[in-house]
Length: 407
Image: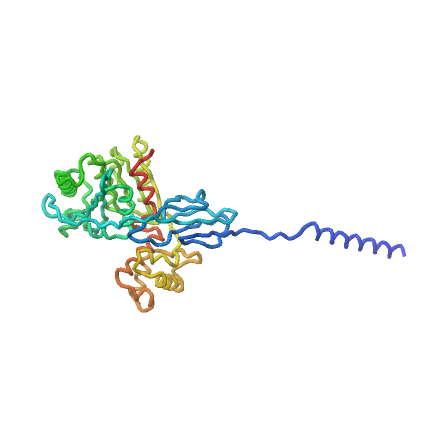
């Protein structure tokens, strides 16, 4: 009897403890993801805490300009850029993109006599402009390429809206089609920086003097330069030689000019630049050159564009590809294994182009586009990868640098 009572007491104790434990320790679900809402833009979805989240404005036309993001903007890396990013916090967040209506810009085109021959020149000068910017193409480029490039056109819109004039011309080798220095490329002759022996420096002076003499602009206006790749190297040297107010070099490291320039210089690099003359070594050199310039007491800034995921509407940015067609091409890339689960493009566009060219009919959505539309698809892929490509992702940062340098 005594043993039976002891057993009952022990069982009762276990039962009571179990019941008490169940009551005091409820199961609490772990929340590790929150929602991003994007109005007038893309990038909405559910993300884990600590994720890098990219958001993008909706497409806008020639009569529009991206203004800014509103909402939880304290999180954003750059609230005035059409594409920006942030680190996902432990809460839901929301953003709204806004656009400004502007007057569409039509560049004036003419042929102006340079040192040896007529040169193509595109220009635009707003009434009362505060200064003007030379926009400079890369290797193999032309004045027409620069004036019609989608990314350069975004910069042109932002510059003009901020009351800057624009001058676009081309290197002498592009005009003649002759590789004058035998380096195997048609591009700006960066060295020597000399307006007597170097025809590219001479042409810039002569073309500008012609515009001065016509009264279209005048010598009191501040001068700036911005270029892509070889044009970036030339912008650095040109701005130093002619003592511009500031220069901007896209995807180019600028080289020896960093040792002597007195002109503020901003570097805008691409993280995964795959160009043989840049790459990771060139990005590191650009950073070192920027630090060298700063160390000499001259203003310099270094920015680098990171890769970003593609989104279904990305290829509709220019307006000649519909959102439906853009989505179809995006889905085709996804189905064929070119995108990760988070929609980052895998590798570089070169391998994709080779595969497409070997069997175009295997890509019916892409194959239905025009040649120019296909080139735009590749350009947008390059931009998402952060390869060697002129980009508009830091336009507002460039405007700030041209206006205030390091102030």
